[in-house]
Length: 389
Image (cartoon, rainbow, N blue to C red; front, side, top):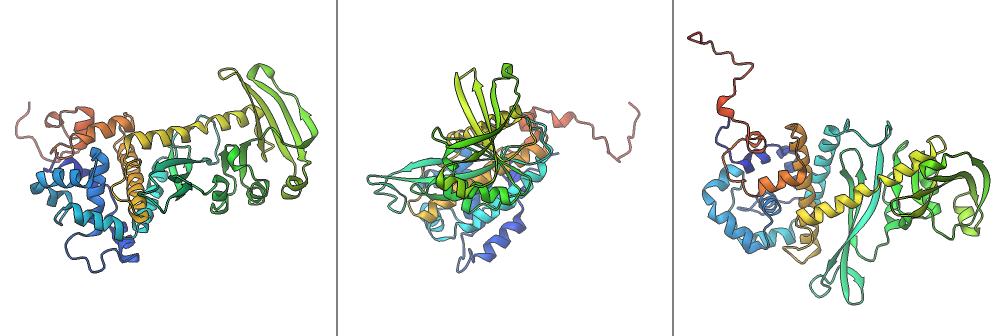
């Protein structure tokens, strides 16, 4: 039964507050703070993400209108535009990045048995980046082009459950392939990437760590065929070959054998050539692995449409990174609650319902499933009946 908590307070109860306090203590987030703590800041920004607030003044106006309910939501400090702006600019963004990593760990544990389009025991990751355009005059630190600013959101997505397990925020000038230098390869895992990550020295490092990769080849690839294996051309496969690189630098960067798979996509009427260091999976599975990479494109599209990561409440690097990491935390929180409550709805539907009901005093499960809790008979009710019905 509902104990009178608002929907927002119920959502907050799923957050590991002790972990958040540990992150705040590590980076001294509350040092010399008297009234508006990091937790207050975090909850205000979560509210802004869930309700699509346009500006800091918008956040202040809406929260002050619900002033009597803020304490029970967990917001104990007075909400003001200037205080929230100062908090976003000055408090270390790594507090929220590290807290998001804790939520990632929880979400991956919940979604570890999530069905995947391919029957593989190993983890499959998709690696890609998305560019967020910024005004260079307002965000001078976000270097991209002469007259244009941007940041890049480099993301490694676990395709079981679509949980982002690694995120790096850089300015727009950082090339995608450099992120391979930051990643710690997971032995036995599959990394699916597009042509932007084709660097044979870095791919050979993945191979030496016993991790597998599937990546599209460039049209000017220089190679020599060693073996050819039969394929079923009715499936779209055109060839399955074992090759070695013959280019001067590529052959030195990747001296081992590679597998080359050519596939024709009837829907797009295009040929695709894939390179991989895995020689045990079928050629069709290799092609399907690359096709599953499309999920990371959908992830970027989803968070840009449904979370506030394209328009920012502050212009400093710290404020931008704080907002993005809190947005990722909101995505993870909604995914965790959805899984724990076993809700058969999409994350989009979940967010839409939350956006108009955060201050309702209704159990979340009742709100999302239209269950009449007043008529529920508890299975483990220990109270004896006075009368036989």
